[in-house]
Image (spheres, rainbow, N blue to C red):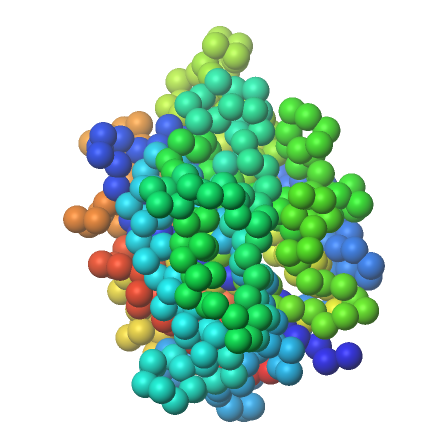
Length: 435
């Protein structure tokens, strides 16, 4: 069996948050260092969260002129001879995301052309092998607030279900649970349909849980050792073999596809195992400090209520743990642009552990990446990006997770003028990583 890659692309993106009201989402996804973790689980036949299998590492790779290169050279498609890709976008549907969803949608036609033609420069000459078999799906960051009556947070939210009923103007039609493309198909139509799918609207919960949503979307319900906080038994289990069956191609008897998980949000992850994190002040005893905590700062003040990052590092790898496929984690988040742009990346040898660690240290130690309460607006965190396009907040949990994936990781910024440059860098990272 030819072993491919699992490319875990957590692309936390969409540009910086721009809310016409001048207010943040009701609840941020702040986290910093995480607290007590949840229950572990197995990753199917042969991989567990404690021992997720031979996920592998891109041990000879370095970043060169925006490309992943190494001793094996550049320009080799990372799924080897299979050319298959499963790409899951996890899109923030809270009220600050209208502009960002539209910005993301604009990039899909170009992204599809690059992936399916291999012509990155669009000059008529392919630079790499094209994707020949593609699955595209979208879920939201909305997992509700567990019986808490916050705006947009009713019930268990979408809980990792693939969404396929677009709400954007001109997109009002039912689409399949996930879109498919095969070589020779109509890539432009697929791009248009997927641009519709990712415009989820902005009525979702402000307690963004992108990592938990992605994990629930792909985890099989048959493996109940890993469960999810919910108010009904159906939403406590994974959806990879139920609502979302067929999207993830990880059959150990077949060819494993590249898996790209793309999170799109302007805040940090707030995936929590303690539902009291989202309770209103009236639910607490008088001496409970959470009574005085603004909702927007609950995740910041209660990091011990959040799942440990290792839940996602091990869980995502375990999805393909028994196939030998690899996991690469990328993020487009609220990191200051100058920390992760082309100039910054060109100074990092991605094969050198010390240089890579120094790169992540520089990101996490930057003054704007330190979580602190805003001096003026004391009910919110200070922003990590504040531009004419909107604001974003320090994505520390996301960057910490990327760091765990070592050379199989990439962080980009959503705080530039548009998403074109970070999308270009990530596409090259997908298709030119050496095997």
